[in-house]
Length: 378
Image 1 (cartoon, rainbow, N blue to C red):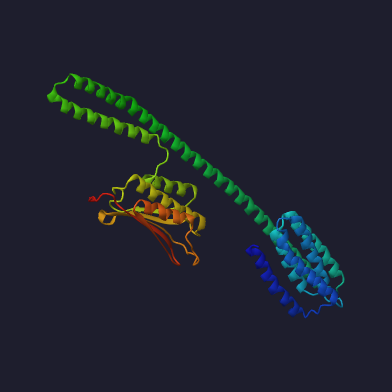
Image 2: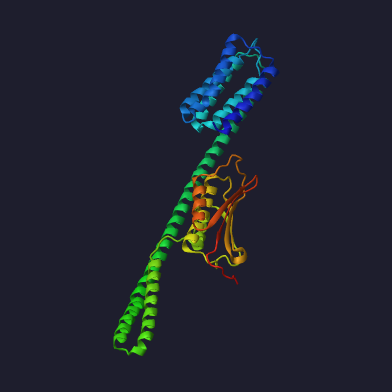
């Protein structure tokens, strides 16, 4: 059940006591049965939330039960009939389409005319009742038209938003492909030029070593070793160009950009002096990337706000520390799930730790990793 249903129930709880108390209405057994039928229909609406035709029949039936409940006694018209009818009609307009709302209006108007024929109202009183009924119907029909236009505008906005996100994803994919093609081209250029020349240099050094004198053998060996190291580093560089998954701080920047574009997250990212120059190993860098990624994913899934504050720092140059803060109220029954436990285990494997702090104002995930090499951060 949604909130609007309970809102209509609350309005009925206010209107009906006012109608009974103001009119001094005394219900007979038949009128009491009609009132019970009205309440039964009122509580049946949630069962037929997706069946507009049945809702139209139920609203029309409610209108007929009102005519029986407020049927004029001694030709005296009960004005509270108009109040309750307006309430039923307003709910029908809110829930049904324009055509179905007009059907309920027609049933209500015809029934009201039959009731008025049984009363002894003066011409002015009759004109007032008809004018009130017509103005109510016109106002509700105008609301229906405005609501219909709002739904159409919302649908168009949703379609445009979906198209915008699709184009953004396509743009990011094309940029990634272009970047990867460029990396592959650079890798091939390095392999074909530098790699081949280093290989030729090694062959020439080997040929020179064979014919060199003993006093030059040591120098040639060192030169050959240096060339082999250069060739190995070149191969590693070419291999890294072929990798598509990027972790570490560079991957985090790309992840933040992607979330801001596609998920409309508001992310404040700060790097204190020396954090990018920290001597993190590949495993440590990737563990930090996965930890921040998991924290941002949890914010998108469970938080009421799409906002995050991310900070990196290296206090004293001996440890690397990161923090992901979400300014949102946390449930007091919070428990660590599989994602946070896996995050903690991954950080502990690379010599780090994970801390989680939450209160009524924020949820903070922070972690620290001891640097493998002590270095002075200038």
